[in-house]
Image: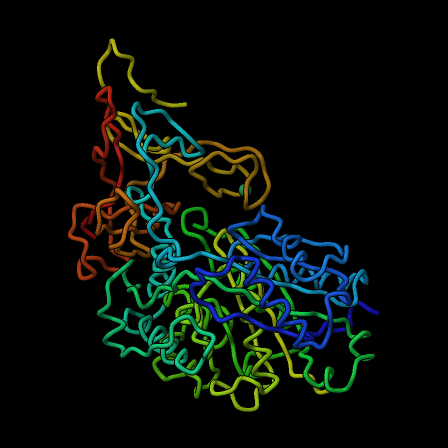
Length: 403
Length: 143
Ligand SMILES: [Zn+2]
């Protein structure tokens, strides 16, 4: 094959996100993996590579433990961890093996079991003060900096990312951020795989407990358990498969991973924008898809303040116009470009390693016309985005088969 | 390594809570500035993240600036008093720093984006020898 040939999603599946006290990490990964294999009409014995993404058990040999449930066929296994882009990185690992000609078919799975930790990134213990002050670490600090020199916890960091957008642009404030959460919670009522499926009024969103202003509790994603998987296949191999498998296959028109280039101030406030813009621009370039062509977008709404910025970063709205765009209903499921019709991380949930695979499942399911009650009518092209602090960003553009 | 904690003979001392805060008559921040491109860092770097150069000099930063973004943290890390205002401040003459906005009620009505602020210090903790750790924050300043 040529490395210019597209790679395809042949099968995909996800568990419902939620809390599974009666299942372990490997049960969840096995359920999504077997689901993806069945969906693609293929068997573990046909896989040439396995990539497993999991953040909390990054050194736990998740891929190999999973093989013991699916079939130990001796294929290469890659265990990957890359912040919130862990799942997307697992997908790209399989994709690169196919592009390199080392594999024709492979399985990528993302999984996480977080249990009841509350919302994402909250309530970590502060560093305890020393009995006698002694300088430690790269900043030579004698006491914990969290809460003394600002916040580095996620709800606050993403709140600051949103307020920085408000600083730079007109028409953006608490209400615009809250509308994001109102939308995603409303969308989730149609998704049986979502962790939470409850609609809230704008007033309820704005008056729920403040976590880190302007993010209230209903504007922060929950933690939870879950898994999602995809089977990827080369263009050459797909053409040898039965017609029905070709018809349901979804084309990966772009797959891009970026990290944050140096920008002014990124040493004190993580820059979640430049790397997202870079990834999106590269994905549009590679695929020839224009933002206006998108029928749906699944983006990384870990906090409502983040989603609003990403409308602009992903070029879904006019530059600086994210506030106006949500005010006029642009990202609602019946709007200009539906964003997070799954309910997004805010309601569908965010088992970290699974997230970057689950958004591919969501987009692919719409492109196949198999999304049930939440189906975006006649969806042909979609974009999936994840970003992890540190930072790492994955953007995929998917297109309906046409075969 | 800058100031050390006091030996017992001389009694308790004040120590800045991070090395880039310098105490004295006029407390101020210092940064490691890349000699090639001017990028500034509060921690030590092996090479510049912006340009890859390896020579740095220590420079004093301004004590005044304006609020670029903020959040009011209500659910804080364990042991941290809340609510408090966390902010990123653009310093006059360059440099960007994150810290708390202090000496003001933590209420969205009291903080505006672009608000003028100046550096202020306070004692944040005391160790078993009676040494005091001094933190810095930013307080509202006249425009
Ligand atoms: Zn430099």
